[in-house]
Image: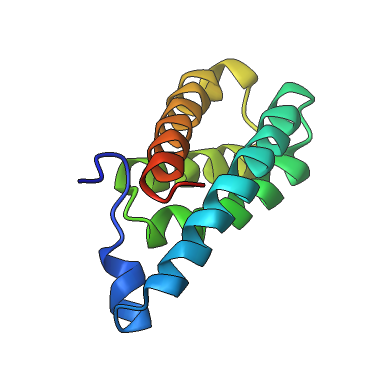
Amino acid sequence: MALNYNLSKVYAISENDDDFALQIAELFVTEVPADLEQVKEGIENKDYKQAYAYAHKIKPTLDLLGMTVGFEEILVIEDWTKREGKRKEIKDTFKSLEARVEKAVKEITKDFNL
């Protein structure tokens, strides 16, 4: 049973298509960590546009995979980029999101034998 993600939305929109679920899982594992690294780089360099662009790209995937807390965290990061906040304001939120994504990647990789 998945602890760090939930495929109910994936199955709902795909009419229980296992191949589609696999594609979403592969997409998450291959793209989200790299995109998250771009968010991190944007935060570190105070490149708000970069951080926003990649956070915005990740957002629908977090929602689709039922990662509610991660989705909320990405919204906080997007808001931070719009306000052009200080790095220390967003550090803990980003670390939490990064850990959450890491756990989901490990679990999905194991669950789907990727």
